[in-house]
Length: 276
Image (spheres, rainbow, N blue to C red):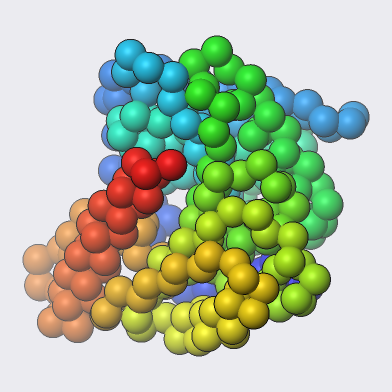
């Protein structure tokens, strides 16, 4: 179970240079769309969620976003805005809510605490938080009743796992996360699963073959795609500012591959959601 839930934790400090997200924060601050914090409840727990609304005429599908190992960061909030811009209601629960110094979540934690706190989350609590966020979005007057989930890194693994626990999902999108390994878990998946993986991310991408085998054996839809040259976390690093002048060729090539992968993956995400 630990490998399933925390497959991304080995990369916690590997991309420390990406932790500064002024560019993502700026996007959120400049957005013309309605973005806000809401509180959802389940049992005796309250969870802060960041939500964004599209500026469209018709009711929209809701997208539940599961943040990566860095928690509900500025980048996670910018992803909410990107989905809202694309025409979807987007909501992301801060799974670390209640662990902050003032009872809040990620924003109240030191950077070196976030991964440790995430490792301490139980599967049941994560599922309950996601269920509460999904239920909140589905009941909105502006929602058409359809809900999908997408997750990144740690959230990608959680997205695949959440599909085993919510039969009402219309789709689960998994960005560089591993899948369940128990056939009994796979059997509970009721929606198609779409995978997005880095070609240079063998630690995670090497698990895809087993997921293909299990999903096929269970008669489930699973469509993974690996992007050549892309590393782990390319959906974030591929939209970050380019390397500074004087960067070596290896760094420049990695950035170019991640940017191309991110652009192609984002196009695919919108195509998948557009067919629901």
